[in-house]
Length: 389
Image (cartoon, rainbow, N blue to C red; front, side, top):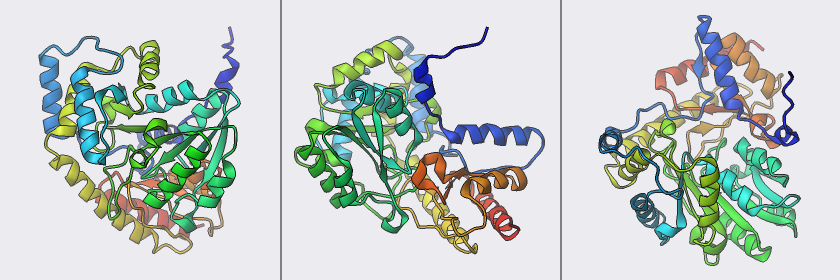
């Protein structure tokens, strides 16, 4: 019989990066050489001290159920680290630990936003923002991020988009896909708008430690925001722990039980041994993570400089994360068709900017989480493609 899905499934989006990865893997299986610049995953192994802590946890029997909000000692450790790192004092009762950071996004929107209410989200931005907003029956209101502002939000535009139905404002800094960074001034304007309109803020800070010349600021540290802000963070990017599935939210203590209840209903709990490894990641030796960021900075400069040598392509130098978002609007082909041609004919997997929303039109996203040699070869193939259009 045909599978008839619930109507709500039609509102659920996807992540194009995984679709392109699957296509690229299929081409590789046919013997084609592919340079992977599509997937947002560090190409480094998890640092050895974290792996050792995970192995020790397994051998010590940390393989059983734990509390839905997280192990008490892990919540304490995560709160300790966050307080020190962000300069904002939080307690363990404000921490909920989840299998990856995406559940925090899903749970917060589910817990706070009613059908018909509005959520502002960055566009171009992580596609799961819009997907979850639509899925719960809320209205997704794009907040444009433009190249001429280094992909920072426009303050007046933000003010014009917020209204009586605005329930939540989503921020992401450093950003996926642009690598842009919000300034303290930007966050102060968001705080002013949120408080004036009684709106919540979800601050996605998953790339907070992958930052170069700039300084990371958290809106949680602005007066009046602690009671209406959830910070989303996790281990996947900073510690090359994507497969460990470990994330967490920092939120008002009054919201944490509801988020933990959603955990109970979906995942039961986060793997105990993963949480113990995550404690070592945050509080232990940081040299592995620091070396990774230093290498990302070298790769960023390599890729940006090379892309800007291609006629018809120009690329801003991102301040964080491990993505570049070059403008290809001057070429004689759409960004979507360019991405398709690059993969099919030149063996370079990239994403069209529209995979991150309508305001990504005219751009492509490259992840520089790959070796310097592969990055050089990848950009050389892009140049050949452009020259042969």
